[in-house]
Image (tube, rainbow, N blue to C red):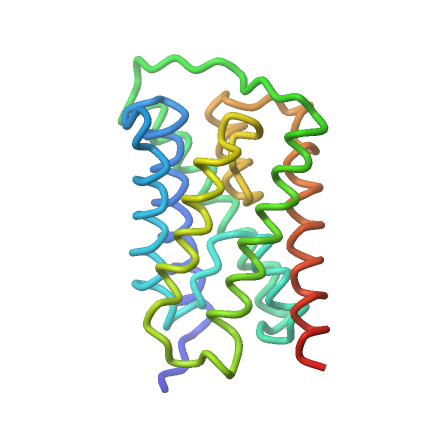
Length: 212
């Protein structure tokens, strides 16, 4: 099995996160895909996972990176660089979406009811990370060909279920992209970031408990 350099991993994380967040900003935030946006987002995530999984693990999400580290499947030296690459990619995608793809697009701030939005981000980030840990890092499912589809379907289900409640981010890099695109107010960041990190950490704890 090829061992890729950190540079190759970071390039992969940037590309995967960039196209995921570009799709979210363009298709959902600026509305180019209308009601089909969740399908565009899930499709982009799935193909980028299959494209980059063998190189970087295809995290594309700081909450996922932290949880995979907690699970013991990611070197601590990779955590910081991965997160930086993911967040920078999210911000870059928002800039491209707003200034290149939809320069005349107008978006208003996402209106969220704090408690439901917090709960939605917590539960579906937990579900996303729990699935990732089980289908993409477990020895018992090693070598399966369905991991990308399974992960993408969690995002699709989450977007369809709670998109109108929280914006269905489940990902701090996506949240950074939404702020950069003007969809989310900086003051509302915690409503996404806190439950995303907590949900991911809880999923890692549950996964580790399952293995003992």
